[in-house]
Length: 193
Image (tube, rainbow, N blue to C red; front, side, top):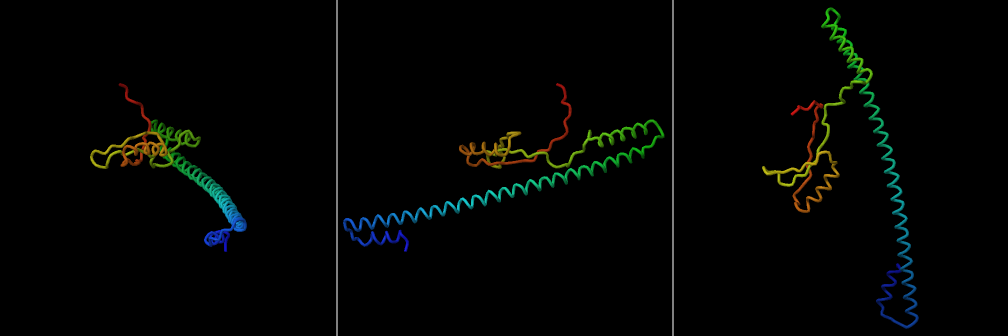
């Protein structure tokens, strides 16, 4: 029987004597307090152990992720180098096919050789992929109907937009986060006005 149960039974008997029962009650309360402290100390130790295990696991996961990122970056570097080598070899082949029979063909061959040389030096680099360049986030403040309105904040991160969304929801509980893929083209000269 625990100290708490003893204390409960003692209180229920209703036998109250001046000194004896009061001293017994104090002893039972002290025993109950000690039991609670021991349980709290054990819980704190277990929580500390759990925390240490979580920190160790998180650290291990971070190391594993960093290692995997390094592997992927190395693989990407290798793939880019192989791709560039194939493109350079193809350009040299095409330049050789142009021949040197006339001035126009020699000029084309020279331009192709020049491009191959620039690629081999890293002065010209083809894009890594044709995928989307970025994702833009916004806040839809009205329904998806014909009067739908999306507030745009170009260049802001998702977390910044989510913070804005929290403020918008105070006045408009239907506001929600939306996103779209943004493709960027090459820079061109602006027309003069």
